[in-house]
Amino acid sequence: TEIANVPSNTINLSKEFPLQLGREIWGKGRRFGAMHIRTGTLYWYAVANARNGEVFLRPFKKTLLNKFGDWNFRCGEIIDATDERNITRHDVQERLRPVPWVENRIVLMGEAAHTDN
Image (tube, rainbow, N blue to C red; front, side):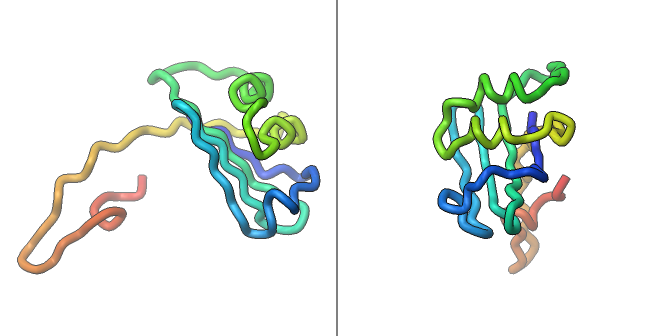
């Protein structure tokens, strides 16, 4: 599952996240990323493994703080500074590895070998 947000009211993170610099932190079955997209605005997302069909109810912030609150780069502070109403959640599905596509001297690899969705 992925939870994403663009906070309208950000804490000052210009030292840790200079303009247009992004960071992603990985843990077992979890990732947290953030990027300073314009002055005073930080985009962030959190991804965690979940069972197919698992239900996530609001408020999301409490669950996020339990999973990411003690991580580096002030993850807890970023989550806490976010208005609960601005947090969105989406399912993320794993794709099967594409079958190699080759015809004569043409090869499609990586992102070109499968659809984006």
